[in-house]
Image 1 (tube, one colour):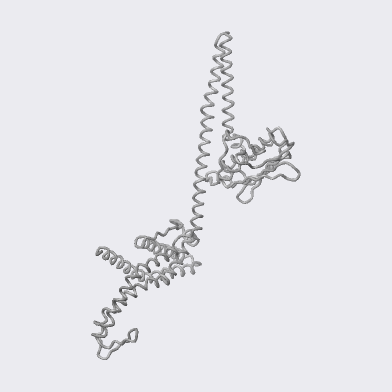
Image 2 (cartoon, rainbow, N blue to C red):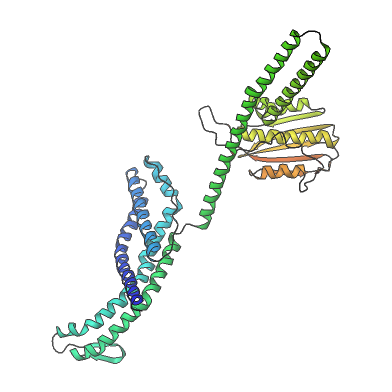
Length: 444
């Protein structure tokens, strides 16, 4: 029991001491808030920009110290979200600090803390001072000249040391007990007020989380695209080269052996299987990333694809130059699958591929004049394409015009390919592998 009381007394004494310190710091906060607002008002003068940045950093330091206090003393954790300031560049530092929502959150906290915060802190401090004053009132009264009087609550008048002790000591004990009771409560309220003012907005946290997920997704798909290119290069330069060399060796052996029909037949079969393996390997490499796509870009690759189809296909792609490799691959394979299913299921006499850029998205349209009937069903080919596109903010919609046929509309986020020496920041798309089945236009 005694240990618990000692601990409670020490905790309340520490909180009361912090309340006094925080009230004193409120004067510094007023200076910092004035500093921020004044330098912002004078921001038109170029020389005041560093002063505003310094004021913002000072406000951040004070806010961080308050976060540390409420976490350590009150057990209330307050998140910290600030946009980092560049190491140099007067205008860049000013611009980032000015546009950072946390800057104005800190300024708002300074204003509230120097008003409502000080009011909350003053209640236990005032109760403590009133209690101490009541206890020492007899000593103070003994120093006053004779005839002095003081009106006390409830119609009591103090006119000598005895009445000062009879009234001051009970009231002093009452205020000290009141201070004992309310100090943890008011300090907790102060901590909640501080957390409410300094805690990052949930919408801001959600936006940051979305940005983080988008960045992580971009990095993951970039790594996947690089791994596919590495596999393609290894197959082309390694496995395919060995198979070609093997075919040449088999041809040389066939020329060196005699006229034994059985041996020559076995060598001919081996050469046939070797040629078939090379053809399948080249098809595999082409399925990972067609060489024409790397050489001529999306427009040239789609035109080449259209020329190989057994029906008339009109291509009209109006795109701003080269796109990032993953985006081109995703668009190419989507168009390829759609055209393959047009040939296989639609019974169309002609088809078309159109594309254009609208803001930061590429809109593709693959249509035909066939019998229609394409639908999205769970587990179907079109549903698989839609899910693959949706994973990267892409969309797939199906329409059947009154004139007949089917029109697929694909929307993909894009960023133009950077100039040599730049960095590819486009939102990548994952190209389908050669194991992906063609899209079933009937939805099967």
